[in-house]
Length: 117
Length: 111
Image (cartoon, rainbow over all chains, first blue to last red; front, side):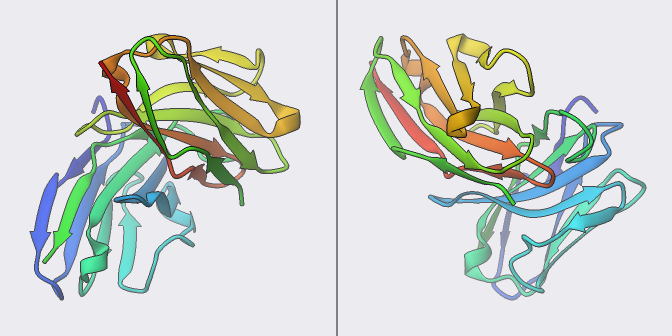
């Protein structure tokens, strides 16, 4: 596609439920990133994929968070047993190359706004 | 891993005033530097970037930034702001791993 596509754009869920957030990167981009943006907290790195593997998942805040990427394309971020503090905008981004592979621009999607009530 | 510091989180200024937002980073190797802008209700957009070459880079909407390697800085400037520049501005640095962001500058331009 022309840009990074994320779905759903908005999700309201009850505390304790599981949610899945989807990211469709720009076609041909090998690197994919997930970030979380909370009010007043800036952008917090969660995980980075190169192809289908995740060389850096050190930003995942707890074991309730997991992500996978299949076919070197679509990625899903799953949050299990959601808590109110998980409420945030979850941003996906992609780039043609990964870190350390040359200068490259990272393009962001519009985000998935998650509200846990 | 690299880290990024942005100063003066909230900035309020009048139209036609000059704007400068500071950005300092910590990373010993080669970096790619970015400024992203997020207008109210919109997603992150790339404002400008520095990879190599001329340390003074020009971006969209009259913004420019200067990379000063000795100071580990990449400050953003605009000589004369407009009301439409009201937004949050994020400095970002990519070293050998993730793209790390500063906490952002909330800029409000008063007509």
